[in-house]
Length: 89
Image 1 (cartoon, helix red, strand yellow):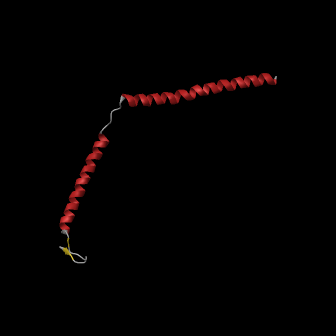
Image 2: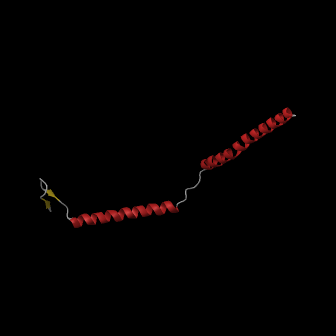
């Protein structure tokens, strides 16, 4: 097929061939996507010892640091209350 509307002659592909190629490409990419999705959904990544250490270490730090600093604040507050009661009497 020749396209005569352009200032130069261009040979165009047969539309049925283009549609067949497009359908084949879409089917191939769809199969690739479904294979990847099935593999990613069902595959479980094993935990590494380094990752477990980081996870548990951060949990311990996030739990103990507020308790540690909160206890010091509580002790300081009670000392201040004790001193203010003595001064008021």
